[in-house]
Image (cartoon, rainbow, N blue to C red; front, side, top):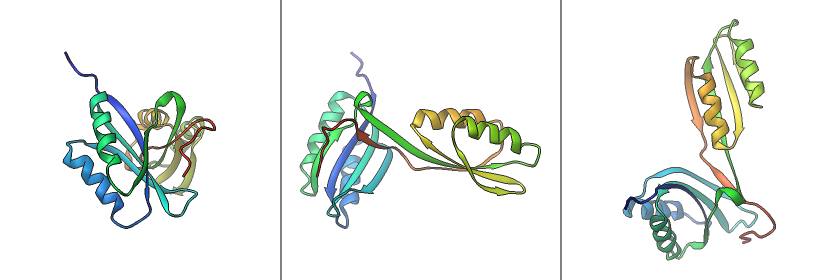
Amino acid sequence: MDKIVNREVISILVDNRYNVLSRVVSLFGRRGFNIESLTVSATNNPDISRVTVVFNGTEQALHQIITQTEKLEVVRDIFTLDIENSLYRELLLAKIECDKHDRSALKEIVDIYRGKIVDLHKDSIIVELTGPPEKLDAFMEMINCYNIVEICRTGITGISRGVTTKDI
C-alpha cells in the first residue's frame, strides 16, 4: 500500500538562544527530511522564537518528527498548522526586466495580484507581493513570459486561527 505524502507545516516555539535553529534543522536532516521552507521570527515574549517548517511527509513521518523535536530541551511547544484552521503568508520580491513598452502591462498584473512596484529602473522593476503561497505561485505563472532577472521568496510563516492559540 502506497503511503500518502502531504505537505506539512509545523510551528515550533523554541528558546531564543544561539544554536537553537541549527539543532532543530540538523534533527530534520539526520532523520532524512528535506525542509522545503523555513522561517524564524520573534514572538511577543523576547525569550521565545517561532520556527515555521514546511516539509513533505506521510502521517507517520509527521508524527515521528514531532516526537523527536519535542525531545529537544530548547523546544517549548510544537504543533501542526493545518490548512483549514491556519493562515499562511509568504513574501515575494521579483526583479523583472522591462522597458517602457512592458511597464503598463506589468503594472496591470501587479495591481490584479495586489502587489506593489517598489523599485523602478529604466530597464527593470522590482515587485513586492505578499499572500498565501498559491497566490505567489499564480503570480509567477502570469509573469513567466517576461524575463525574470531575480526572485526572492521568504518561505511560509503561519498562525492558527481563533482565540485558542499556543500562547507562550
